Length: 150
Figure 1 (cartoon, rainbow, N blue to C red):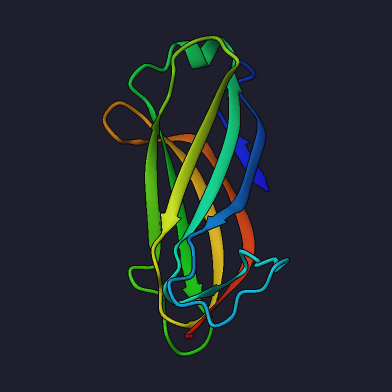
Figure 2: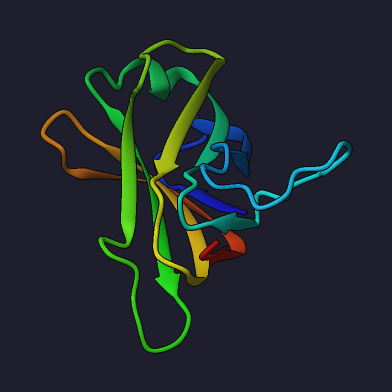
């Protein structure tokens, strides 16, 4: 995990954590046995997957930043000759202008995608009131995801 803030010591981002969340139920399970423990790193091509992110912001500069938002995006890159389409999914989270601390959460859902192996990267950037990028950014490489046809 990497996060960088170039505002001042008055704006702090801590507790930055991103993880693969829940996968949707398999629409066409081949076999299901008691005690099965599916992994959210291997999905069938009819399942969606959620990415969960949490972070905390505090500081006097944070209180001055009204009408700002956090842009949370998930990029998928397919290994091999193909590419994921559209390849990125996103959500916006409104910034709360207080000294803090304020805990934020974001959930980005990846809909069912074609079979293949994909690299997953989560990014966080802060947008100002006119959707201009502010000097707050971070990313997490979530590794690989295999999607198979069943």
